[in-house]
Image (cartoon, rainbow over all chains, first blue to last red; front, side, top):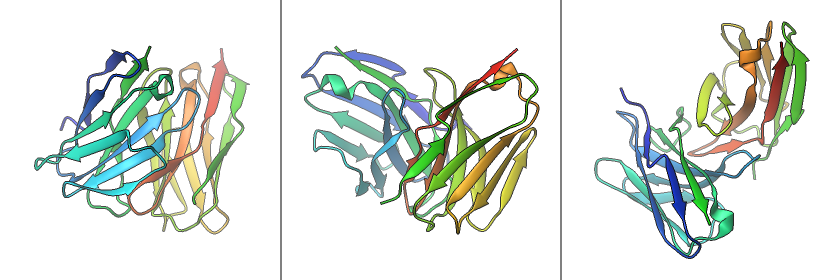
Length: 113
Length: 110
């Protein structure tokens, strides 16, 4: 079992550009959540996808959007990148939308210059 | 809105000491609480998961407790080693999302 896999591991983008991050959930999981972790802080919940729909959303602007595919994998898209979007982006997968254990990937480090 | 606080923010101890990290949360309606380890620039490594119906979990030198009614959890590390140096995060899980504290950065000096 490969666990939760994220790609790419590192990314450098220019302010104003758009970026897409990818996540494959752990085998048997159908729910994917995304988190943003700024330096020195704990991860902050961005949104959750289940059955290809956004089910919950944290306090993030509409520049952050996502998608879930029929195979449960997911993408996080960020438009009009700001310097403040530089962070570690973590993907977590779980089974269902309740409180089952979440498994986290190793993250994508996004640097906006 | 769930809020999670971790105290202290940083801790430095000599090798061999036993230590306790604290985590408090404001809403007791949680499914579980999880402790993670994070090395600099890396992702999260799960250490212990405590379901809401449990009081504690143990793994090797680690023991985590949960008092849901008071909104508190502790992570006890026995006989600390320099390799334990990392940031320790706690996260509470409600329906569908995890809320994290900002972590305790632990340094264990040889």
